[in-house]
Length: 279
Length: 279
DNA sequence: GATTTGTTTATAAACAACCTC
DNA sequence: GAGAGGTTGTTTATAAACAAA
Ligand SMILES: [Mg+2]
Ligand SMILES: [Mg+2]
Image 1: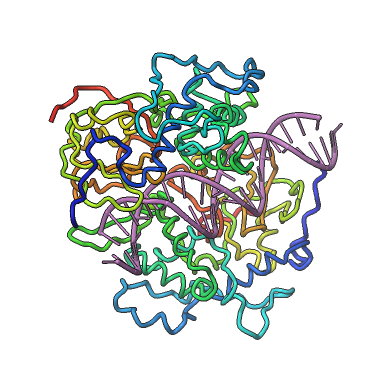
Image 2: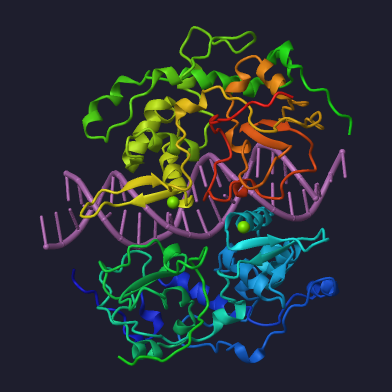
């Protein structure tokens, strides 16, 4: 019941306890953002369906901020370290990178290897099994075979596709609606990062890279009115909460947007429109 | 390419190759059928919601047929051997054994332990994790909390519930519709049992316990007309096919009955009505 | 005949929320 | 009431069995 004092945003992220994991992940956010693909990814480009060219303007490269998030001069960890994205998220990034929002299995493999070298060089071969598992398991992913074709493409169910791309994950977002009305985060426990007492201005004042986090899924709840508290996982081990507990919607996370077939839990991009409510 | 000759039904099941697994499973079908619960299951009976009394007439005890399926005089294997049912199937058996078709998690645990001692005495404790995983994962299982109650019950989505019970799995069924029109089973491969050249009279002539197998899910396809071939898994490693290949519906198994949210693959009970077509 | 693609189940684990003692 | 520890619920990862292409 004692409201724990949330870390002040302006004192810097370095003061929050046990942030090692988060900072590791934060480095990921900027490192593989754009076109630094390995050369081997160019050869079969003609056989693949066109991928939409990246809009460079959409990417905000992360300047190294204060604190331990500045990377060393050697090979970036992102080449050997597992990205913080779930398979479900990476598959969406891959499919949504194409013009027609569809991709063959083989190209999904390649896209992921090209954008996340971990899977090319480090991961056990079973990661491809996991990709196939995810494609089959989640209703969000739908296989389509064009008439008179033997090729089949994986698509994203139109009701479920929010057209998120890897680039979007890096964007800076703003709060929308009546977010951040809650009290201080009550009980920051192991592996939990409470931002506490969140207001829009509080969030705007957060030093980078905090606002670059994927926050999207808990922002809008069509049909559920104004939600005054939320809690979500940024990456494994890093969780954020806003507002009062005890007032959660009694819905499992994947039901929060009931019109969607399936929602990923982690690592979604900021994808917001609308007015910012100053609190 | 060579069409393998299917085993003749009247020469007995003992001649089919590599049936060790199947016979092990067949023993399962009769051994735990009725009320031979362990004594420790009686105590908390009052706290539980009523379970419907078993209709003894519905169970056909399996007399020991010819071949290696007769069990030894010692403790039946079924007490230490894993039952052939998936978690999804066992959960349905448990919930459907109650009057109101709902059950708490704890009672699901108990029901399974009582009816399948393997889970009480042999299985690693992680099996309960798997039960919870299945309850959450499959949309078929829906949690309901009565108003003003703290208890929550697991139910089966009414559209998906076929009200199958453990007892029904033992029932003998008959073919319905135009089943069994196909040719010989083409390529029995490792772990596959081809019945081949199946007709209704062929199936009626099969010695027990063949017709006691769970066959239900491929029998009726509302809205799909007459299906002339099918293939299904009885238990792990034992697969049956009817009819010609190359004429499969292009649907994944769980979509065969599209009005259902989710269908288990294995171990479903015979649940048939209608005329038997003699071929 | 071997490889790739697709579907399903099992198991372990991370983690949140709830409940009980 | 507060806290510790066990129970219940949701989600992801990984391996594997197996069918079909
Ligand atoms: Mg799918
Ligand atoms: Mg469920």
